[in-house]
Figure: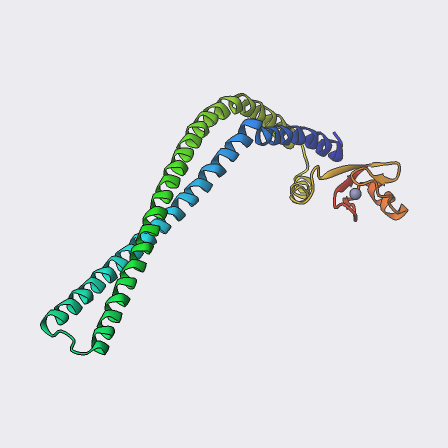
Length: 233
Ligand SMILES: [Zn+2]
């Protein structure tokens, strides 16, 4: 067999194998599987964020609870001061009452914030339960899809192996230098070999100058300047 014919025959079988491999990748079950995986990862991320938010809220709640305790102590101190040393003038009474009222306002504000935090924490915990439930359900369907996909791809993988073996058989008759060139070009464009048809590269339909045409016809190794494919007669 002519060295280019051998290469061409190899490309035909190699392309068939690649098509089977691509079909395996394109399988709707596999796509569903990937979607389910992305969904799970997304929910895990969301869940982690909620956990962080809740932890931050718990910290904030602790700080406020301490502040409330301090304000209450302050209030108690004011009361003791009042009992031990009652204010003598109307001005002193006014000042003390103002201080008591400031203290009570502070406590009230803290309490409002605490109840807001409690509400938000409850809401977040509910959300977190939902997110976890969604993730768990997605995991179930992921596992099921995975089994389906493995079952489904088993026969296709068998086909692929058969086809790869067929290509490999022909590979043995291909000139090693040509084969190396084939593999190099294939990294950039596939199929990597194109026929010369009506003075054009059949890969990209670019018309070739006559100098190139005679080079191809003489059996030299020529790459298309436009698409990079190896052009064979
Ligand atoms: Zn071309």
